[in-house]
Length: 352
Image (tube, rainbow, N blue to C red; front, side, top):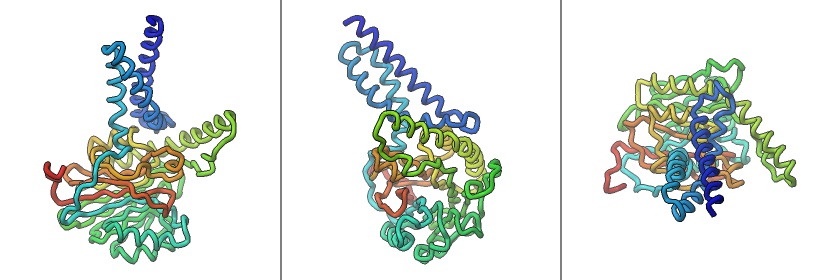
Protein backbone atom coordinates (compact mmCIF):
# COMPACT_ATOMS: atom_id res chain seq x y z
CA UNK A 1 0.00 0.00 0.00
CA UNK A 2 2.87 2.37 0.86
CA UNK A 3 4.48 1.91 -2.58
CA UNK A 4 1.13 2.59 -4.27
CA UNK A 5 0.69 5.77 -2.27
CA UNK A 6 4.17 6.96 -3.28
CA UNK A 7 3.39 6.27 -6.95
CA UNK A 8 0.05 8.05 -6.70
CA UNK A 9 1.76 10.97 -4.97
CA UNK A 10 4.17 11.43 -7.87
CA UNK A 11 1.37 11.04 -10.42
CA UNK A 12 -0.56 13.72 -8.56
CA UNK A 13 2.44 16.04 -8.63
CA UNK A 14 2.69 15.46 -12.38
CA UNK A 15 -1.02 16.30 -12.75
CA UNK A 16 -0.56 19.54 -10.80
CA UNK A 17 2.53 20.41 -12.83
CA UNK A 18 0.69 19.79 -16.09
CA UNK A 19 -2.18 22.02 -14.91
CA UNK A 20 0.21 24.85 -14.08
CA UNK A 21 2.07 24.44 -17.38
CA UNK A 22 -1.13 24.52 -19.44
CA UNK A 23 -2.54 27.48 -17.52
CA UNK A 24 0.68 29.50 -17.83
CA UNK A 25 1.19 28.43 -21.44
CA UNK A 26 -2.25 29.71 -22.40
CA UNK A 27 -1.17 33.18 -21.26
CA UNK A 28 1.62 33.41 -23.86
CA UNK A 29 0.63 35.65 -26.82
CA UNK A 30 -0.06 33.40 -29.79
CA UNK A 31 1.63 35.80 -32.22
CA UNK A 32 4.87 34.88 -30.40
CA UNK A 33 4.18 31.14 -30.25
CA UNK A 34 1.45 30.12 -32.71
CA UNK A 35 -0.73 27.29 -31.46
CA UNK A 36 -0.12 28.01 -27.78
CA UNK A 37 -3.69 29.18 -27.13
CA UNK A 38 -4.95 25.70 -28.00
CA UNK A 39 -3.79 24.73 -24.50
CA UNK A 40 -6.85 26.50 -23.09
CA UNK A 41 -9.00 23.82 -24.76
CA UNK A 42 -7.34 21.18 -22.58
CA UNK A 43 -8.26 22.72 -19.22
CA UNK A 44 -11.73 21.09 -18.93
CA UNK A 45 -10.12 17.65 -19.34
CA UNK A 46 -8.25 18.12 -16.04
CA UNK A 47 -11.29 18.64 -13.83
CA UNK A 48 -12.18 14.96 -13.39
CA UNK A 49 -8.62 13.79 -12.53
CA UNK A 50 -8.27 16.57 -9.92
CA UNK A 51 -11.69 15.86 -8.43
CA UNK A 52 -10.98 12.12 -8.15
CA UNK A 53 -7.53 12.73 -6.67
CA UNK A 54 -8.97 15.25 -4.19
CA UNK A 55 -11.49 12.72 -2.86
CA UNK A 56 -8.79 10.04 -2.68
CA UNK A 57 -6.30 12.14 -0.72
CA UNK A 58 -8.97 13.50 1.62
CA UNK A 59 -9.67 9.86 2.54
CA UNK A 60 -6.07 8.67 2.99
CA UNK A 61 -3.66 11.65 3.27
CA UNK A 62 -5.61 14.93 3.68
CA UNK A 63 -2.49 17.11 3.61
CA UNK A 64 -1.62 15.93 0.08
CA UNK A 65 -5.02 17.13 -1.20
CA UNK A 66 -3.71 20.71 -1.30
CA UNK A 67 -2.25 20.10 -4.79
CA UNK A 68 -5.68 19.25 -6.13
CA UNK A 69 -7.30 22.20 -4.37
CA UNK A 70 -4.75 24.43 -6.12
CA UNK A 71 -5.38 22.66 -9.43
CA UNK A 72 -9.15 23.07 -9.21
CA UNK A 73 -8.73 26.73 -8.21
CA UNK A 74 -6.64 27.34 -11.34
CA UNK A 75 -9.28 25.65 -13.49
CA UNK A 76 -12.28 27.35 -11.88
CA UNK A 77 -12.05 30.82 -13.40
CA UNK A 78 -11.74 30.00 -17.14
CA UNK A 79 -14.37 27.27 -16.78
CA UNK A 80 -16.83 29.64 -15.12
CA UNK A 81 -16.48 31.80 -18.25
CA UNK A 82 -17.73 28.87 -20.35
CA UNK A 83 -20.17 26.89 -18.22
CA UNK A 84 -23.39 28.58 -17.01
CA UNK A 85 -24.58 28.04 -13.48
CA UNK A 86 -26.50 31.21 -12.50
CA UNK A 87 -30.23 31.88 -12.67
CA UNK A 88 -31.90 34.54 -14.79
CA UNK A 89 -32.72 37.75 -12.96
CA UNK A 90 -36.07 39.47 -13.33
CA UNK A 91 -36.38 41.88 -16.24
CA UNK A 92 -35.50 45.42 -15.17
CA UNK A 93 -37.06 48.69 -16.26
CA UNK A 94 -35.31 50.22 -19.30
CA UNK A 95 -33.32 47.02 -19.84
CA UNK A 96 -31.25 46.84 -23.03
CA UNK A 97 -30.49 43.55 -24.79
CA UNK A 98 -27.30 43.22 -26.82
CA UNK A 99 -26.68 40.10 -28.91
CA UNK A 100 -23.69 38.84 -30.85
CA UNK A 101 -24.41 36.35 -33.60
CA UNK A 102 -22.35 34.82 -36.40
CA UNK A 103 -25.16 34.43 -38.94
CA UNK A 104 -23.15 32.34 -41.45
CA UNK A 105 -24.14 34.65 -44.34
CA UNK A 106 -27.77 33.51 -43.90
CA UNK A 107 -26.97 30.23 -45.65
CA UNK A 108 -28.18 27.94 -42.85
CA UNK A 109 -31.78 27.89 -44.11
CA UNK A 110 -33.60 29.40 -47.08
CA UNK A 111 -35.34 31.94 -44.84
CA UNK A 112 -32.55 32.50 -42.30
CA UNK A 113 -32.59 36.32 -42.43
CA UNK A 114 -36.37 36.42 -41.96
CA UNK A 115 -36.24 33.89 -39.12
CA UNK A 116 -33.39 35.72 -37.38
CA UNK A 117 -35.37 38.94 -37.69
CA UNK A 118 -38.38 37.32 -36.03
CA UNK A 119 -36.15 35.83 -33.34
CA UNK A 120 -34.57 39.24 -32.65
CA UNK A 121 -38.00 40.75 -32.02
CA UNK A 122 -39.17 37.84 -29.88
CA UNK A 123 -36.05 38.30 -27.71
CA UNK A 124 -36.31 42.13 -27.74
CA UNK A 125 -32.79 42.53 -29.11
CA UNK A 126 -31.95 46.25 -29.14
CA UNK A 127 -28.41 45.98 -30.53
CA UNK A 128 -27.41 43.09 -32.77
CA UNK A 129 -23.72 42.55 -33.57
CA UNK A 130 -23.36 40.16 -36.49
CA UNK A 131 -20.43 38.46 -38.15
CA UNK A 132 -20.37 36.93 -41.64
CA UNK A 133 -23.39 38.92 -42.77
CA UNK A 134 -24.44 38.88 -46.46
CA UNK A 135 -25.96 42.30 -46.98
CA UNK A 136 -27.80 41.36 -50.16
CA UNK A 137 -29.88 38.87 -48.14
CA UNK A 138 -30.28 40.92 -44.94
CA UNK A 139 -33.38 42.91 -45.91
CA UNK A 140 -35.95 40.94 -43.85
CA UNK A 141 -33.78 41.49 -40.76
CA UNK A 142 -32.63 45.05 -41.48
CA UNK A 143 -36.21 46.32 -41.57
CA UNK A 144 -36.38 46.01 -37.76
CA UNK A 145 -33.31 48.18 -37.15
CA UNK A 146 -33.30 51.79 -38.40
CA UNK A 147 -29.64 52.38 -37.48
CA UNK A 148 -27.03 50.18 -39.14
CA UNK A 149 -23.26 50.14 -39.64
CA UNK A 150 -21.14 47.80 -41.76
CA UNK A 151 -17.45 46.95 -42.10
CA UNK A 152 -16.21 47.06 -44.78
CA UNK A 153 -18.72 49.80 -45.61
CA UNK A 154 -19.20 48.83 -49.25
CA UNK A 155 -18.74 45.08 -49.29
CA UNK A 156 -21.55 42.55 -49.49
CA UNK A 157 -19.81 40.21 -47.03
CA UNK A 158 -19.05 42.00 -43.77
CA UNK A 159 -19.60 42.44 -40.05
CA UNK A 160 -22.52 44.63 -38.99
CA UNK A 161 -24.04 46.41 -36.02
CA UNK A 162 -27.83 46.86 -36.10
CA UNK A 163 -29.39 49.13 -33.50
CA UNK A 164 -32.80 50.42 -32.46
CA UNK A 165 -31.03 53.38 -30.81
CA UNK A 166 -29.25 56.14 -32.74
CA UNK A 167 -25.74 55.45 -34.00
CA UNK A 168 -24.05 58.84 -33.63
CA UNK A 169 -20.67 57.75 -34.97
CA UNK A 170 -19.28 54.63 -36.56
CA UNK A 171 -16.27 53.39 -38.47
CA UNK A 172 -14.72 50.20 -39.82
CA UNK A 173 -11.60 49.05 -37.99
CA UNK A 174 -8.60 47.48 -39.68
CA UNK A 175 -6.33 44.68 -38.45
CA UNK A 176 -3.41 46.43 -40.10
CA UNK A 177 -0.78 43.96 -38.86
CA UNK A 178 -2.32 41.23 -41.03
CA UNK A 179 -0.63 41.32 -44.43
CA UNK A 180 -3.14 39.31 -46.45
CA UNK A 181 -6.10 41.15 -47.90
CA UNK A 182 -9.69 40.05 -47.38
CA UNK A 183 -12.35 39.59 -44.75
CA UNK A 184 -10.04 38.60 -41.89
CA UNK A 185 -8.24 41.97 -42.19
CA UNK A 186 -11.41 44.07 -42.25
CA UNK A 187 -13.77 42.13 -39.94
CA UNK A 188 -14.01 44.72 -37.15
CA UNK A 189 -15.91 47.94 -36.50
CA UNK A 190 -17.22 50.26 -33.84
CA UNK A 191 -20.44 52.23 -33.39
CA UNK A 192 -21.11 54.88 -30.76
CA UNK A 193 -24.72 54.37 -29.73
CA UNK A 194 -26.84 56.78 -27.67
CA UNK A 195 -28.69 54.60 -25.16
CA UNK A 196 -31.28 56.15 -22.81
CA UNK A 197 -28.84 56.01 -19.90
CA UNK A 198 -25.42 56.44 -21.54
CA UNK A 199 -23.51 56.65 -24.79
CA UNK A 200 -21.55 53.46 -25.36
CA UNK A 201 -19.02 52.32 -27.92
CA UNK A 202 -19.97 48.92 -29.31
CA UNK A 203 -16.98 47.13 -30.84
CA UNK A 204 -17.90 44.19 -33.05
CA UNK A 205 -15.09 41.81 -34.07
CA UNK A 206 -14.59 38.55 -35.88
CA UNK A 207 -11.21 36.94 -35.34
CA UNK A 208 -9.67 34.69 -37.99
CA UNK A 209 -11.54 31.46 -38.49
CA UNK A 210 -9.99 28.24 -37.27
CA UNK A 211 -10.69 26.69 -40.68
CA UNK A 212 -12.25 23.63 -39.03
CA UNK A 213 -15.25 22.36 -40.97
CA UNK A 214 -18.11 20.20 -39.75
CA UNK A 215 -16.88 17.29 -41.89
CA UNK A 216 -13.47 17.46 -40.17
CA UNK A 217 -15.16 16.20 -37.00
CA UNK A 218 -17.12 13.30 -38.49
CA UNK A 219 -17.15 9.99 -36.63
CA UNK A 220 -14.09 7.85 -37.36
CA UNK A 221 -13.90 4.07 -37.25
CA UNK A 222 -10.40 3.24 -36.04
CA UNK A 223 -7.68 4.46 -33.72
CA UNK A 224 -5.47 5.49 -36.67
CA UNK A 225 -8.31 7.48 -38.24
CA UNK A 226 -8.99 9.18 -34.90
CA UNK A 227 -5.33 10.18 -34.53
CA UNK A 228 -5.17 11.38 -38.11
CA UNK A 229 -8.36 13.45 -37.74
CA UNK A 230 -7.13 14.90 -34.43
CA UNK A 231 -3.77 15.92 -35.91
CA UNK A 232 -5.52 17.50 -38.90
CA UNK A 233 -7.86 19.59 -36.73
CA UNK A 234 -5.03 20.66 -34.39
CA UNK A 235 -2.86 21.70 -37.35
CA UNK A 236 -5.70 23.91 -38.62
CA UNK A 237 -6.14 25.47 -35.20
CA UNK A 238 -2.43 26.19 -34.85
CA UNK A 239 -2.00 27.61 -38.36
CA UNK A 240 -4.56 30.37 -37.77
CA UNK A 241 -3.57 31.06 -34.15
CA UNK A 242 -0.87 33.58 -35.07
CA UNK A 243 -3.44 35.71 -36.93
CA UNK A 244 -5.71 35.80 -33.89
CA UNK A 245 -2.77 36.85 -31.75
CA UNK A 246 -2.04 39.77 -34.06
CA UNK A 247 -5.72 40.74 -34.12
CA UNK A 248 -5.77 40.63 -30.31
CA UNK A 249 -3.18 43.42 -30.08
CA UNK A 250 -5.46 45.68 -32.13
CA UNK A 251 -8.51 44.89 -29.98
CA UNK A 252 -6.68 45.84 -26.80
CA UNK A 253 -5.73 49.19 -28.36
CA UNK A 254 -9.29 49.87 -29.56
CA UNK A 255 -10.68 49.20 -26.09
CA UNK A 256 -8.10 51.47 -24.43
CA UNK A 257 -8.65 54.29 -26.92
CA UNK A 258 -12.44 54.42 -26.59
CA UNK A 259 -13.88 57.73 -25.35
CA UNK A 260 -17.01 55.93 -24.10
CA UNK A 261 -17.74 52.82 -22.04
CA UNK A 262 -17.19 49.76 -24.22
CA UNK A 263 -19.31 46.77 -25.12
CA UNK A 264 -17.01 44.34 -26.94
CA UNK A 265 -18.83 41.59 -28.82
CA UNK A 266 -17.99 39.09 -31.48
CA UNK A 267 -16.88 35.72 -32.69
CA UNK A 268 -13.43 35.22 -31.16
CA UNK A 269 -12.88 31.68 -32.49
CA UNK A 270 -11.34 30.78 -29.15
CA UNK A 271 -12.44 29.95 -25.63
CA UNK A 272 -12.08 32.26 -22.63
CA UNK A 273 -8.85 31.47 -20.83
CA UNK A 274 -6.22 32.41 -23.38
CA UNK A 275 -3.91 35.41 -23.59
CA UNK A 276 -6.41 37.84 -25.16
CA UNK A 277 -9.08 37.00 -22.60
CA UNK A 278 -6.82 37.62 -19.60
CA UNK A 279 -5.54 40.88 -21.08
CA UNK A 280 -9.10 42.06 -21.73
CA UNK A 281 -10.12 41.29 -18.15
CA UNK A 282 -7.73 44.04 -17.03
CA UNK A 283 -10.12 46.54 -18.66
CA UNK A 284 -13.48 44.80 -19.13
CA UNK A 285 -15.87 42.58 -17.16
CA UNK A 286 -17.17 39.21 -18.33
CA UNK A 287 -20.81 38.91 -17.15
CA UNK A 288 -20.85 35.20 -17.97
CA UNK A 289 -18.52 34.34 -15.09
CA UNK A 290 -21.03 35.00 -12.32
CA UNK A 291 -24.26 35.57 -14.26
CA UNK A 292 -24.15 33.12 -17.15
CA UNK A 293 -27.17 30.86 -17.54
CA UNK A 294 -29.01 28.76 -20.11
CA UNK A 295 -27.60 26.58 -22.90
CA UNK A 296 -23.94 25.53 -22.98
CA UNK A 297 -21.70 26.04 -26.02
CA UNK A 298 -22.03 28.70 -28.72
CA UNK A 299 -20.62 26.74 -31.70
CA UNK A 300 -23.26 24.23 -32.71
CA UNK A 301 -21.08 21.62 -34.55
CA UNK A 302 -18.96 21.22 -31.41
CA UNK A 303 -21.90 21.38 -28.98
CA UNK A 304 -23.61 18.63 -30.98
CA UNK A 305 -20.62 16.43 -30.19
CA UNK A 306 -20.61 17.23 -26.49
CA UNK A 307 -17.84 19.86 -26.71
CA UNK A 308 -19.54 22.84 -25.12
CA UNK A 309 -17.10 25.64 -25.96
CA UNK A 310 -18.15 29.29 -25.88
CA UNK A 311 -16.23 30.97 -28.70
CA UNK A 312 -18.55 34.01 -28.92
CA UNK A 313 -18.01 36.61 -26.18
CA UNK A 314 -19.45 39.88 -24.94
CA UNK A 315 -17.41 41.83 -22.39
CA UNK A 316 -18.09 45.34 -21.12
CA UNK A 317 -16.59 48.27 -19.21
CA UNK A 318 -17.00 48.07 -15.41
CA UNK A 319 -19.16 51.21 -15.30
CA UNK A 320 -21.90 49.43 -17.29
CA UNK A 321 -24.32 47.16 -15.43
CA UNK A 322 -25.17 43.74 -16.83
CA UNK A 323 -27.97 41.61 -15.45
CA UNK A 324 -26.95 38.33 -17.01
CA UNK A 325 -25.78 36.65 -20.18
CA UNK A 326 -27.06 33.55 -21.94
CA UNK A 327 -26.72 31.49 -25.11
CA UNK A 328 -30.01 31.01 -26.91
CA UNK A 329 -30.48 27.49 -28.26
CA UNK A 330 -31.66 28.16 -31.80
CA UNK A 331 -30.47 26.59 -35.07
CA UNK A 332 -30.53 29.46 -37.56
CA UNK A 333 -26.74 29.39 -38.09
CA UNK A 334 -23.79 27.19 -37.16
CA UNK A 335 -23.39 29.47 -34.12
CA UNK A 336 -25.81 30.16 -31.31
CA UNK A 337 -26.44 33.80 -30.35
CA UNK A 338 -25.06 35.18 -27.09
CA UNK A 339 -27.37 37.72 -25.40
CA UNK A 340 -26.31 40.18 -22.70
CA UNK A 341 -28.81 42.17 -20.64
CA UNK A 342 -27.90 45.69 -19.52
CA UNK A 343 -29.72 48.07 -17.17
CA UNK A 344 -29.15 51.68 -16.03
CA UNK A 345 -28.53 50.60 -12.45
CA UNK A 346 -26.58 47.74 -10.87
CA UNK A 347 -28.71 44.83 -9.58
CA UNK A 348 -29.51 45.18 -5.89
CA UNK A 349 -28.22 42.68 -3.36
CA UNK A 350 -31.80 41.64 -2.74
CA UNK A 351 -32.26 40.72 -6.41
CA UNK A 352 -29.00 38.79 -6.47
